Image 1 (cartoon, rainbow, N blue to C red):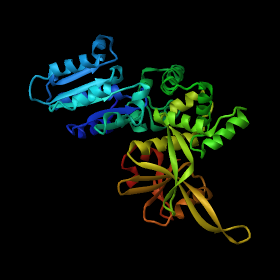
Image 2: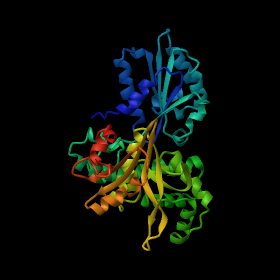
Image 3: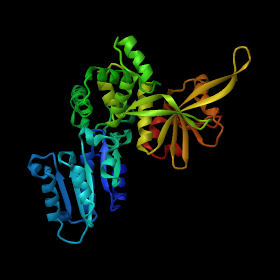
Image 4: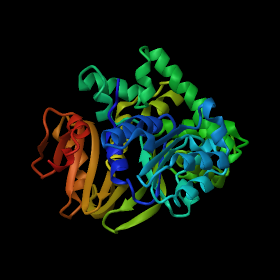
Length: 417
């Protein structure tokens, strides 16, 4: 079974020969090695690159242990470059090499070499890894499978696929397991033995129990507004544990640095400024979130919002959580200032979309509720409500696009209808 990952493959193709080290980053087990060693390697061959001009080394392979020595690796690569033709250096799990930053920078001095690397330890997973290459790195960030990628190999209807995806998420390895029990065991195991272990080891965390508790709190409240102070209050009232807000902020940064969660800032739409606190947090993979909670909390509304957020990020949007201030009469008829939330404010170059997410809109009252914040934004950018249980995509009487969830997830052009 082959999973097409054309979005990322095309990025690699566009970035060829740009004079930079192409660094493939992302959550562990999301398919970085598959992208480089299978999909991109095949592209090079099909483009006419001779096989002996593709230097492909899996550094986690015991047979290649000698090349974990930086001088051995440099010497070996240089020995394979025998003419003036273009060579492609593909290194998987490059963090196994000591002083790998210096090694990669040295490859930049080879005029007819183009270098691509992946890595999977905590240091390499850091979102600021590009700084290791002194401004000469080009990051290609890869996410777990989108719903569209998932459905390209799932045998069933979108509704059936949605139920599986909402439960287990989009890590590609899950397609190797048939039973739900095995999928659950896989997710539980890699969460504890891979993601948490990396974060604890890299950052020398001593209070690993509190780190896990924080993950549980975030997983239980995806999409809710919070900040380190509120989290500290939760620890004190619910867990009877005193945690300083600064410590909790560090832990949040650790999770984000490993691409496990993402922070979404609040944006004052009318004031055109960011609101420093509180913020929202979403999980990069919903299956990992569910596994962390032992699949006890599977409220579809919050899961739906998380998946829509991930899809928007995959499509390249900068995503904020919006707020809208407006005046409306209170019960006494007096005009008072109110504030309403917009789930997502999405920006990409000259495009902007204001998006609400709803499980269903069964009544006109529910429609009015979902549209309320959107109708108080007085600019020309498109307003959208993405709805799961929608009979058809159409515009409301007020000019808001009511967009079917599957039309959004399975059609890249869905937002432009």
